[in-house]
Image 1 (cartoon, rainbow, N blue to C red):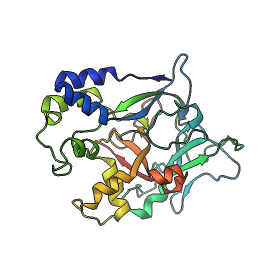
Image 2 (cartoon, rainbow, N blue to C red; image 1 turned 90 degrees about the vertical axis):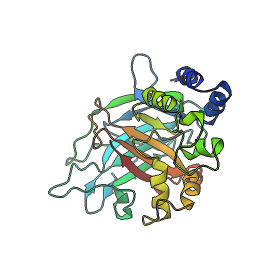
Image 3 (cartoon, rainbow, N blue to C red; image 1 turned 30 degrees about the horizontal axis):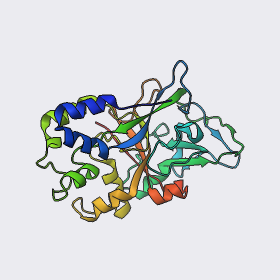
Image 4 (spheres, rainbow, N blue to C red; image 1 turned 120 degrees about the horizontal axis):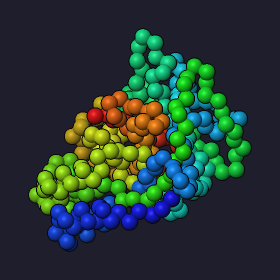
Length: 289
């Protein structure tokens, strides 16, 4: 569990941008905790797959009418780098993530979609407070558990596309939202270098979500305003600011996890709800190539 200096990202920015612009752009990036398979002497902060530890009072999450959710991952918040994030992430307790992955589908496939509130029960975050008595819970017999992969953590700056509001509003406040603008950060050589720097979404807590397609905050903001909200509604950017990444879990061969075609699962939550530990208000979305 080591602090990453993001030296490679610093070098990339200074190679492709004027020095003053590079420093300003780097200053706009947000810290995130990247998770990867633990090895050697790495401190374990969580797991992909395997069996979760749950209090007796917590029932295994179920999507009524569909079936039990699969256990995806958990993180021990006290084991994470202290004070690393710019959001009120828990400093103790355990977060466990469950998702209806289609194992129980018969003839029809049921998908959890952020723009379909009737499907939201297919993804759930369970928070186990520090000190709560929890024990290993067997996976329901009708499900096959994913292979157990211990996770280690490192702190990194998380990359945001130049057209992401957190970058665009600072560098080109009068530009059309989500569209390129006249600025060195929109130069093709720089954007290509960004893509090569971080081609995979990866597993992550906090920071800017590493979206596979358009910003996942935009999808969640639209769902929060109402699934019928026009994609050009001016309220969307303001609503996006309210939502922060809780966690994302990428396709992972070691855990035998494949989300669509190389996709990624995302849980987002309003900052105020995170501070008050209202994890039942988190929203889920997923993207694939």
